[in-house]
Amino acid sequence: MLDTSRQFDIAIIGGGIGGSVLACILARHNIRTLLVEGSAHPRFTIGESTVPETTFGLRNLARRYDVPELENLSAHALTRRNISPSTGIKRSFSFVYHRENEPTRPRECNQFLTLAPPLGPDSHYFRQDIDAYLFHVAVSYGATAYTQTMVDNLHFDDDGVDVVTRDKGSFRAKYVVDAGGMRALLPQLLELRQDPPYRTRTRAIFTHMVNVPQYDTIGPPRKEHKLLSPLSQSTLHHIFEGGWLWVIPFNNHESSPSELCSIGLNLDIDRYPKPEGMTAEEEFWHHVNRFPSVAEQLKAAVPVQPFIAGERSQFSSRRVVGDRWCLLPHASDFIDPLFSGGLVTTVMSLHALGHRLIDAVRTDNFDTANFLYVEEWTKRAFRYYDDLVSSSYIAFDDFELWNAFHRVWTMGTCYGTNAIQEAAIGWERTKDPAVFARLERAPYRGVQGIDFEPFEELLNGAVAAMRRYRAGEMSRDRTIATIYRLLRESEICPGSWNMLDPNDHTPAKTFTLLPNLRTILWGKYRSPSHVRGTYFTGGALIGVHEAWLHASGEVRRSGRVTWEAMRDMFISWNDDSFRRRTPRSAGSRAPLTPTHTPSPSEASQEVRQLQSQP
Image 1: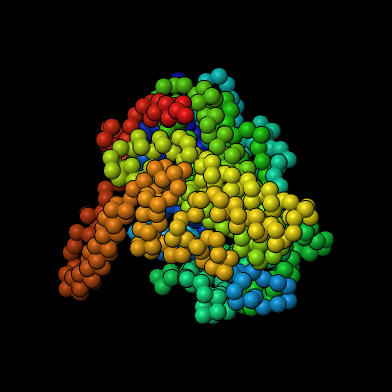
Image 2: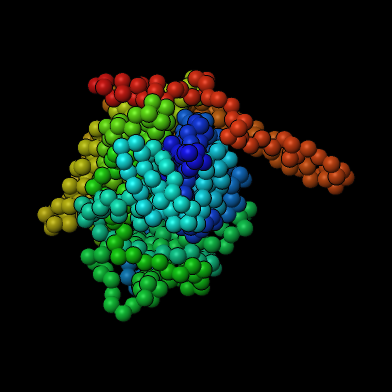
């Protein structure tokens, strides 16, 4: 007799962010979901820095698939209050340039700010808390989940797959998703790994540390560097010829109980081959001590995790989807931590994969052709990040070269984030999750504006110029001039941004409410025809409304905390716990209706119709 407790629709291997979010989505839609994690929560892992595309994308996932808990990851205040106070705040990306044996020069730095409330700022995820939270949310929605359970084998047949674990026996599923990261099982079993076809050739050494002071107390003062936001409230990139070092603090706001910083060194393999007879820790400090300002920041730092080092960060798989299986992005490929592209690509993949899996289960149709879109755009995302990152390592040769090239990434972030926001605005207006199907329609597909032809032309031209510079075919000055010319000719730089002035090292300015409205109004009324009507199509009034809701909500929350503190001085009984949201369980979950989310069949049909349009 069939043991139904071991029968599932979808099995997910790996309980990190990607695997757990997918399990939340599927279980919420009454898909019988198995989630298997080889280690235990909480656990040490990296992948901590978010970007607006990540947080906006998670917000959209929460609404598209009616999993409101995911929205707690969409802005720092929500994450800090509802998941982990050890979440660091990220108000910007900051880049400080270093020369060997020389203190940093005050003006050799750049900054690109993240959004202000209510849509921001971004976060530094303390992953052991974030991953555990998402894993538990998946369980609360009805996923069957196991930790400390290794999957040793997978046996596929025409009807599904047997998932063979080391200690829990075998389970049966109709489809399997591998979210296991670099050492994922499926690529090994199916011999999917290939020599990475990427120009980026780097390796990393990383750990967590305590006693890392704020760089604002070490480096040049604000009156000299003239940046708009504290460097200690950013993902700080110390960049130098052939490499960079990240400083990702979790202790950079008043309410954080953490003393930790994530620290990682990334090196061009061809410029810095792995030295013989030197441990990872010794090599790390060797490079830190080459740069006096970096050495000053880390001189008292103490690692609380062993230094972890790899041979080469890049890996690749020949396929992303196959007969009854799929790889999430970090199980498929990886480029480099620069620009935090891993989580962005994962969120993009989850949008495309979620409704396809739900539809496949409900129609009992797991035809691989239905999942090829996921493979196409996952691979295209990795090719984009390879172009971007490999060119950035070239740009690290010289500050002014970097000062020019990083503006290309800035414009990709602008249009990639705006594409996601276009779908969010549609949802705000209609409350119909079917609007998220537009994320699979040109020019909104993929990540970082890669499906927007004017940005693609800008990127390709800038990357070609960087490669010619590396080959000795173009001088530094001509390469810089070419990049600024391409930026100008693209006509995609918002009029309120100062992208064409090399002396402005924070050219996008601030994303507080009024400057953000100016950017929206430029896009809506003054941008060229290839921008207007496609991007910035609305949102000014919605933004003001959300700002009001955010401000009034903060006032109510502060008032409630004050009242509860005063009440508890005199009264023992209260109803605080009764007012907490009642957890959804597999037995009590309300059925989904079209007012909550479209039928997956209807959603997939709409996506196919959109893709067929010119």
